[in-house]
Image 1: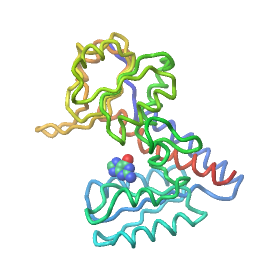
Image 2: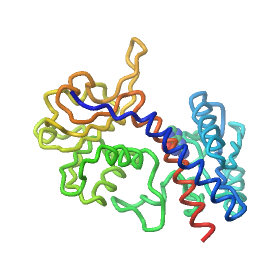
Image 3: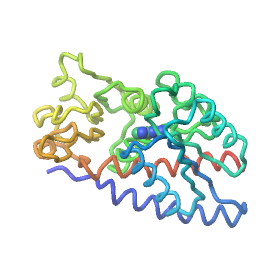
Length: 282
Ligand code: GUN
């Protein structure tokens, strides 16, 4: 039976570590890290995410504020808010919650965030598979790597299969694994021999959003399985991209959904904010 990678417990440990780190940094530099989250409009799911980010930041002792703008905000107004945060030395991290209303061009807005305050890590991995030196990686890919590391499995030289080639998770996670010297395969919806590829994978990161895409018979015995998928079934239950029960019979380690990657993502946002702060004080 696979060992469960408990994302909630691992995140809780990180929060405690970061809380202490923030206290030490405040004592030393007389300033706490500042995280500012901008949300435009009333999307209920986004409101919950933003609230959770604010709560997490305060939990670790950061200064945090959500800037709530009406859905009618113009792109120019939004860019001007970003510009003033870019210039404010008390601001270490800026996150513009997505999605944005359709009259606003997402790419223009994301590009307006100062790269050294881009806690989403969009700038850090903007081009291709390489993390730009000195910049932070996106939160969910960073969470996936952290969870793999907690298993003690050696990433270097392993075969890592990333299923999904999205800009937010698939590509950056593949880039980070490559940076850790894994041999990386990126599979996607057109991949023909997914089962054969999966059976040779020491690590699988599934990030496609299709329930039970990875079945038990695709798992190499002892493999580390990281499930980034969040799928709501007709009965309202939430499952990942991996058939958890079946995969447990063969995997060495597996993340549950919920309770795996999800809780770690906001913890990594805090880590990214701390990393940006470190660059600002040095
Ligand atoms: N909306 C859903 N996920 C994300 C994310 O990772 N970053 C931002 N900025 N918005 C999101």
